[in-house]
Length: 130
Image (cartoon, rainbow, N blue to C red; front, side, top):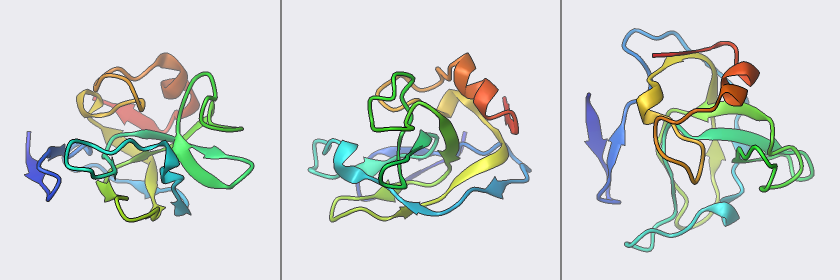
């Protein structure tokens, strides 16, 4: 599997399957208060993370089955395909709503890579998983 490195010294995997046609969702600000700084004091949002929209702020937040990241965070809406560095503040994030993704490299924030729940798969029917 191809990967790339960044200044955060971590591998970043391509989550899109080869030849995948994609449809991007809306670009929104991400609420970076939910990100924890890593060993290098960097706050990063990796590719393959399932996101929801906090309906009170209209910002992307990590998806959580229990809606623990704000109102509406229990409903997945997009999945990131790009690495975002939010060390110095929040930035606009865009995710995919239609694509073929490699499930082994996708994650529900706080969980293990490759463990995408049936609830996410049902809520995002235009994402095909390999």
